Amino acid sequence: MAQDKVSQRYAKAVFDYLKDEAKVRSMIGELQEFAMLIEGSSELTLVLTSDVYSDNERLAVVNDLVGKAKLSKDTQRVLSVLTAAKRLDHLKSIVDKLKLILLESGNVVSLSVETATSLETDEKKKIEDRFTKILGKKVEASYKVDPALLGGLRVTAAGRTYDGSLTGWLSSFEESLITG
Image (cartoon, rainbow, N blue to C red; front, side, top):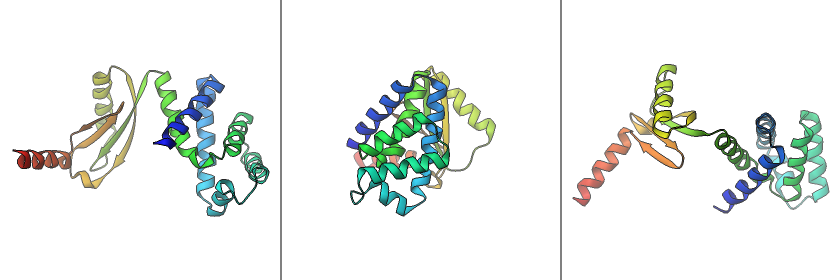
């Protein structure tokens, strides 16, 4: 919970700093690239998140990586701030929050759709159209296959979950049998 608040603050600060949708989208891509770079190396993760190394050593590593990856000056500034504040371990969460802020600024709702099997393009379009009507806003959906659902789908949008899965129905049915 505390990490969410910290990530939200940093994401909002980055969004306010850039003030341009195109720059924010570019920043999201570059920060994701940097996060994958860190996650791909346990040694690099240790150097950038451990107190064993000094702030100057961590900053030098970040600047070196930024230069080699040819990231923008804005991204370098953000990564420098996160490094100095010892918040690089929050990077993925900050990127996720930044995406949500960007969507909200464009009056778009993020949908997280979980299904038991993969969906065809026309099925995805139907789900997105349906939720555009329900929510009264444009939607941007991400899809994930979860065989544990057995059938149907579960959609999370704007902090609310719509559970139309067989697993959800069975759980609800079991609960009603127990409680009478």
